Amino acid sequence: MAAALGTLVFYSDFDDFETWKHALQAQLPGLPVVHSSAVERPQDVHYAMAWKPPAGFFQRMPNLRLIINLGAGVDALVARDDLPSGIPITRITDPQMARMMAGYVLFAVLRHARDIPYFEQAQRRGEWAYRHPRAPQEITVAVLGLGQLGATAACELQRQGFRTLGWSRSPRQIEGVECFAGEQTLDDVLGQADIVVLMLPLTPQTLGLFDRARLERFKPGASFVNVARGALVDQPALTALLESGHIGSATLDVFEREPLPADDPLWRMPNVLITPHLASVAIPESSSRQIAANIRRVAAGLEPENRIDASRGY
Ligand code: NDP
Image (cartoon, helix red, strand yellow):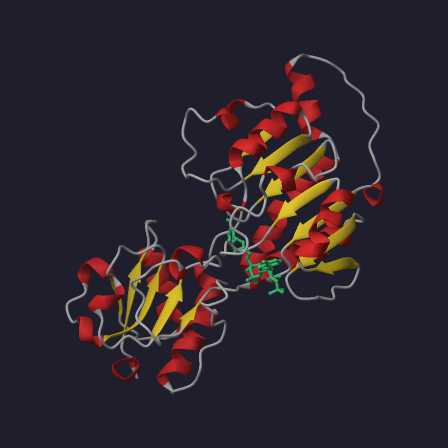
């Protein structure tokens, strides 16, 4: 069976090769899984599973049949100019990954909704600073991007009782979520939201979508959560609006430059919480099931599932 399947080559910046190999071989016993640094016969490689591989990576493998993006965001991959043409690209869309993301978003939204940054600062001053809590239904949360991750997070937020708005490119229907579609509705959505959660992919259409003018459309004092990509946002404008208080507070997991440079003013802002791009990650055990299913499909001459549309950018 393994000989018929061909070899899978793996590349990632993280030290997780053995974990992935074990998880993949639990699904497809005998599948040769080789680290990119140890490929002896590139002509045997049929599947490449990679996260941000170096330039020219795929061109070494003349018999490639499938590229598996080792994550949900495909912006870094589709922006490359060295992709072999006609080879399907899939991404990970794992419900466990969506659950991990929904947990992060829920934490960030509750933190803002319950004024936790205010209490953290009061505690540092040794102050008993009572501020009456708002009920969840008094708070409007807008989730921008209603894909696999965004829709799961929006459902979780509406379950908590928040008035939840959702925004996407094409019209969507999600129970309990007021859905809007298209750029012409974006300012209306932003103007209603006490908390804005950014969960859009980075594409030519969304690059810089949150420029200064757009950020100024936020309700005064609104909170901002970015778990998408830093390049969607004009970071200096965001910093200035956080300084002025027009944007009241932010939870930022992604940045224009990562790691965020040590001298960036965002590090020292009391109304900003920074995490180093980890809101959600691919989970080997659960993701391997869909990767193995796609390998079986491709080996049988079928179309893989979760194929991305490179022309659309996501
Ligand atoms: P999906 O591709 O499943 O969904 C994308 C959503 O964004 C869809 O609802 C889509 O609309 C909408 N969208 C795309 N372009 C536009 C546009 N121009 N205007 C309005 N809406 C648009 O993505 P996921 O939910 O799986 O992931 C979202 C992003 O989260 C990833 O691309 C990645 O960048 C980021 N991410 C971050 C992680 C982290 O740790 N911080 C981890 C994993 C992912 P439509 O429904 O009409 O197609």
